[in-house]
Image 1 (cartoon, rainbow, N blue to C red):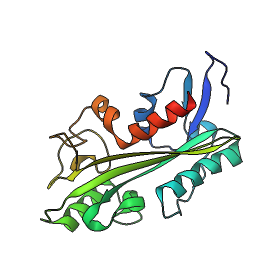
Image 2: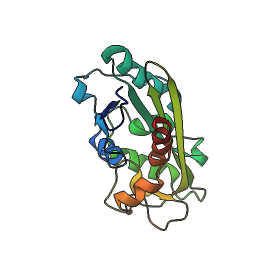
Image 3: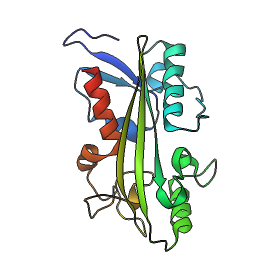
Length: 197
């Protein structure tokens, strides 16, 4: 990791999700170059076999450091719904099955909740930073409720049904700029940035 003042620092974000890359890149200071897995030629299928966000994040970041030599951070995020005992949780991306997409996951969540009045939920992100000198964890949580139906065209995943506390709009109705300031990922990433600084 090059930490000479004024020089670029190369840091791998263990994802090929362009939505995430775009979201995080907009938060980064100019001297940090964010590389995706594809940028370093990593096309490995890194299995997310742990039962916690922390475990999965460490698994991914460690894989890149050990096999490609780059300092790396990885995140694992998910939606935790109170009445569902924290589900979909670490299975958020595959909630409706191994090959499910956002639409299928959303439909399953809405169908599962039905007319249930307790719709409290939270988005959680855990970021693991792994370099030769350390492994550090950073957590971000934003609380809110699940709406009765999807609203909004922005965002991805469960954004259209998640209404954060203090807002009348879902994540998918907010601008990227507003979401970046309040999201679970932004909170965790802010802690990572402060640590890097």
